[in-house]
Image 1: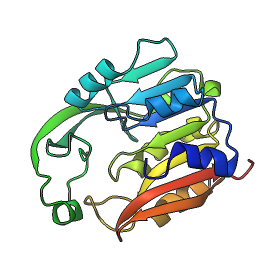
Image 2 (image 1 turned 90 degrees about the horizontal axis):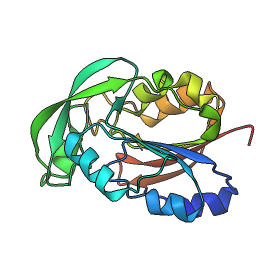
Image 3 (image 1 turned 120 degrees about the vertical axis):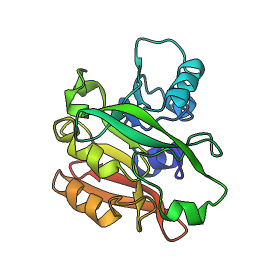
Image 4 (image 1 turned 180 degrees about the horizontal axis):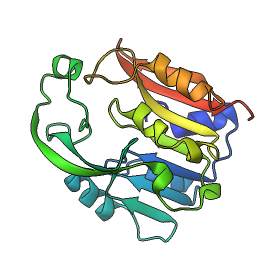
Length: 207
């Protein structure tokens, strides 16, 4: 997270009861969640090697659920572009574009077939979670489209956003703003990394 969990909780007086973390990588944020007493956690990570590391790093806990699965607005399988120089943090369903120029030392060496589903299809108690933390390398809008029902229960979204095509065909921040605004969310904070991407905090206007 570019913007720390400590900061957004303090600055916006957030009460987080559970987090759905989409694009979990190795679960680096788990310790922050635990430190803030956030007990209900779901982690989605589609890449095989990343998921194995995620399982090894996180404790066995009935309240911590792990899914070796990509989320989007379709069901089936897709190919993911895989890199190793950045420990798989830049893996994406979308083909890299500006990413190749901005981070030339990161090469996408192979593709991996992954499973994909809609969040709304996953059986879980939606009332236990009120935050989504999502970093899917440009695929965020597709994930939101497949999570409309779940978003009824969400008050807080922390999302990577793009100003340009870091990945080919990725949704721009204004598209995400428009989609989420129709579901009652406002973008209240953005931290830009250079001129192409950053992280944003969206809050449901009822809070």
